[in-house]
View 1: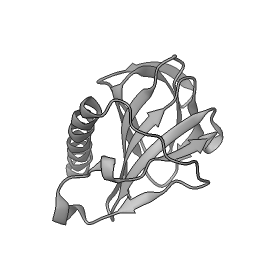
View 2: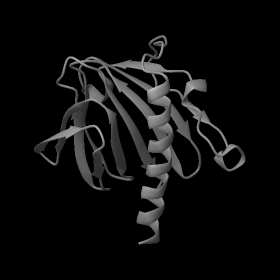
View 3: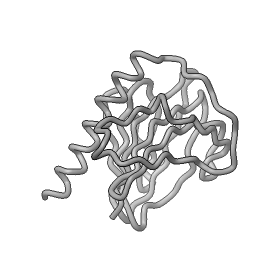
View 4: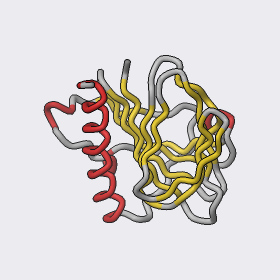
Amino acid sequence: MKHTYRLFGTLLMAATMMLAMSCRNQNPEPAATTDTVVTEELNISTIGIIDFDSIAEDMQTNFKGGEGDVAFRIFKDDLNKVMRVRMTPHSSVGLHSHETDSEIIMVLNGSGKIVFDGQELPIHQGQVHYCPKGHSHTIINDTDQELHLCCVVPQQ
């Protein structure tokens, strides 16, 4: 139970920071496309705040076999990977499973749909999707607007 509270506490902290940053910076500048997602490794215990604006945005095309372009700003330490994700209109992250970890996704802005273990579900701003270890999911931006997410992948 303590582990679950820690995960959601981490998500809430990251989501609060993400929401504040997304309100401040609605149109971030895109970065150059690369083949791998770049992560920023810092010691959060020393800084206390993840400043995604200081982390380069990495644009991926057809990420995990999905469609279109998805941009990532990633912070990673020994316990978690925390990401600010910007999905372009009509893009998706390909279907994938979490065999060794889980993922928590909060929608900061926009709407789309999640396919979780084969079931399609709508998702919108303020909602959280949880994909536990051993399950599969994909997220799809089926709108004409960008979809902004905060994602946490705890290292298990």
